[in-house]
Image 1 (spheres, rainbow, N blue to C red):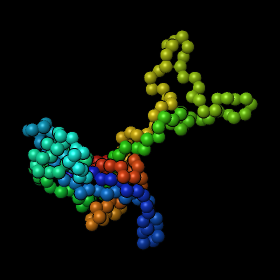
Image 2 (image 1 turned 180 degrees about the horizontal axis):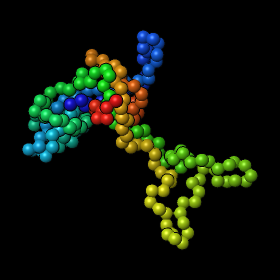
Image 3 (image 1 turned 30 degrees about the vertical axis):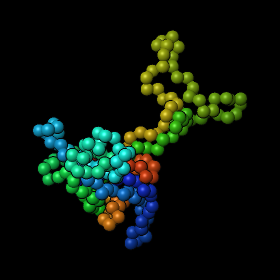
Image 4 (image 1 turned 90 degrees about the vertical axis):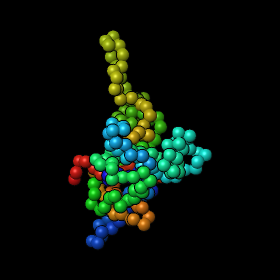
Length: 209
C-alpha cells in the first residue's frame, strides 16, 4: 500500500546541484495508524483504514470512540480507507510512516480546494467582460441565458454565478522530490489543493509517468 494521510504545510523551493530551482509543496505525511482491516469475506472488498492526528476523547463522537476502543486505540481526527491487494500483511495498530514513498515516485494528491464564496461568471467561468464605453452597462453580467416560448426555461448545466471552490479536488501525477524520515515530511513537485494546515490524501498514481 502506497497511500497515507497528511497535512499541507505550505510551498517552498529547493535547488539542484546545478542551481535549478524546483517548486515543491511540503506535506506532513503521517504518522498514521492502522485502525481497521477489511476483507472480502467480512466486507466484500479489501482495504485498510488509516487514522491520522490524535484528538481529545471529549471532542470525539461515541461511535468513533467505540470503533477505535475495540483495539485499544485513541480517537483519531481523520479516518480514511485505502484499497490494498493483500490486507493480510497489515495489523491493527501498525504504524504507517512516510517511508512508504521514495524519491521518484509518482503520486496523486487529493484535498479540498480553497473556498471562494459566491462568484460571478467572469471569475467562476472565465467569461469576457462587456465594453466599458459608449453607454454600455453590461460589464460583468452573464447576458441572455435561455429561450423565449420554446422551451421557455433555462437548460440544465448553464454556466451561471454560484459557489466557487470548496470542492474535493485531485491533482494527478506529481513527482516525489524529497523525503524527511525524521520529521515525516514529503516534498512533491508543484502545488496541491487546499489551504495550509488542510488534510490531504497522498496515493501512488496508477497512471504511471
